[in-house]
Length: 315
Ligand code: UTP
Image (cartoon, rainbow, N blue to C red; front, side, top):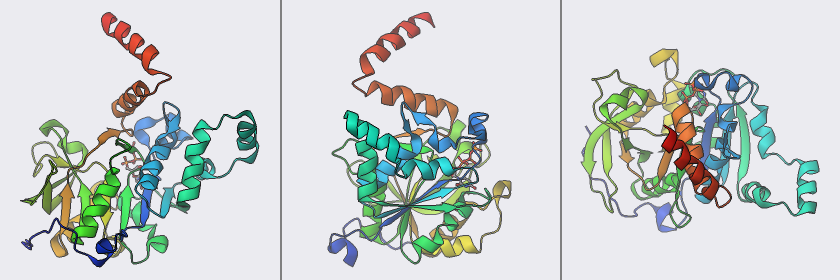
């Protein structure tokens, strides 16, 4: 076990210059989405709407708000809907401009103006680790962020987005840093789980130096209750680990196996975060995200609240 102390203060030259060393983000969105069949037979689950925005747009907005320069979308077969969504749609956009209906367009334009959207094809869904590895021609030798395309993180405008929080910790420590959250014993089998030793933490944020990473442990065998909710910042070394990776659990190239090697060799941190998280790749999580985010909208709050109250009275 690596027992080097972890500094929580800014120490790398990149951090001193105020420029984040993490400029690129990868969003894997090439899974088969079997939990959402039949809808996902033709529609990628990352394009299913939360109220009226595709989940993936919420994830890309998080990347853009964190100030990254490039976002790499990993798409699978039949997933041109993703590429088309971020592309310009002249006829529609010109009509909306003419009619002054530019609310949703401005978010998309903001993204196009602030970040390069790059698409890469994962030819076969061989696992999350493999999906990330396909981004190597764009990532090269740089540290990079990973955001799962079906996990939503919501922050207040005044707060740093979750992926930005991890990038800041990477900048100050030089160590790969992943998000973690507490789950009950009954849920550990649904997640990658990390266990480790607590290190200095501040402002209600808990940080571990990771010792073990286990993919979806069977019930009763999890080494902790710290689950991985799909936000990571990695040293480029992880791509070399993935290049040599053998299929793990379920015959897939597992990201968690590569993370275990990085944790042992270079060290890795896991950190709690400020923000709300929804698992939009799970049916219940998807419904919760729709209801809660709709309740935050001025155009829906009053009517939806009235409806939910009347529904609760009938249950
Ligand atoms: P999931 O395991 O949640 O996605 O992967 P899945 O396999 O599509 O889901 P189900 O269980 O069959 O419903 C987490 C993220 O990683 C991507 C998925 O698209 C999702 O956003 N992923 C997964 C890939 O890009 N490629 C893969 O080979 C596997």
